[in-house]
Image 1 (cartoon, protein in one colour):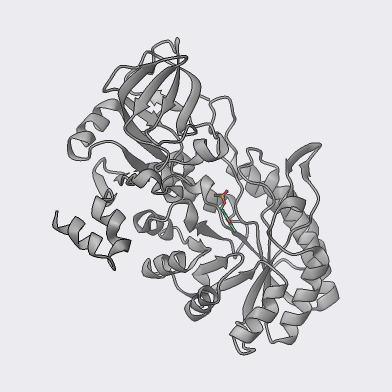
Image 2 (cartoon, rainbow, N blue to C red):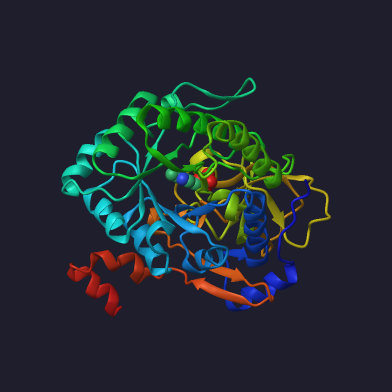
Length: 425
Ligand SMILES: *Cc1c(COP(=O)(O)O)cnc(C)c1O
């Protein structure tokens, strides 16, 4: 697949006159087209709902776009709940899929009427005390089948080694207890493999969860309201990968649904998803400028951004494609490490990357940063996080989060006289 920026060099040059590099920029048109296709792919299921995984891109302007398409929000923390509430999402439009959850987060989730997705069996007792025995009407439990998760013979991930979810046995017990506590309707959730670039992940996961739901219903007699397939649909970060086909994925889940739930007479069960990466990944880019070269044992291009803006390469060795703007048609006959300014040797956006010759001032477009990009950032080395821009459908550009200033960074010191001195300088 030929990976092309969603914005031209001319447009970026115009944008940088108002908003200096580096920044993340998002493509409203792409976001809308993608969410519309997702909805269509699952339109066969009457109760279908996507709960956008807020952690992937916690910007209210982005969330508001998705909301127009009926998306709810999947939250995992106090502030994600606050943000989603502020976006106008109410009650069961909120999913709370957390783990090792502090009491105040559970209380906020309950007060907002969110669907609470319990990660662990022991949390039932914890919630029983916290909620004075009064559970919400709807509850969800997170399942972990253990072992390896395979598609054909390929190991996709290792749930047996993951901290999330309950064992099968615990699921049955959890539903039995929660039913006794007055819970009326239930959901089942599982997230078994991340960034899957195959159309088979969701259908295989769905079939497993549908079969579990049938057994749980038979044994415990509870009403299964929904199956939450969670996140995990991936995107082709590298140009040699084929993108997923969301219609094939929707059809695959539909087939499993008819096969398992059709037979069991459970055709009123809703399908929920909690996609993050798939919703936003390709529709964001980090735009940064080449500001230095370094010729030692390797050739380095130093850019004005660093891992605080995009951590995935440093954290996972993740590949992010890079386009040198205006040089798309030039031969990539140079080999560079593209590096940021952190005092950390893993601060490399690309290692041994073949690119056309880079010159000082060139704009580098780092692809696929729309999910788990800005939101995963941090402030190591006292580096400030940069702005987020939205390229609107009509071609206008809107600042949807300003860049941090030194005072933002120091603001948590405001109990100290040092802060006042900094403020007055
Ligand atoms: C991270 C996460 C998601 C989103 O995952 P993606 O890979 O971005 O689709 C959904 N649900 C839960 C519980 C998560 O932790």
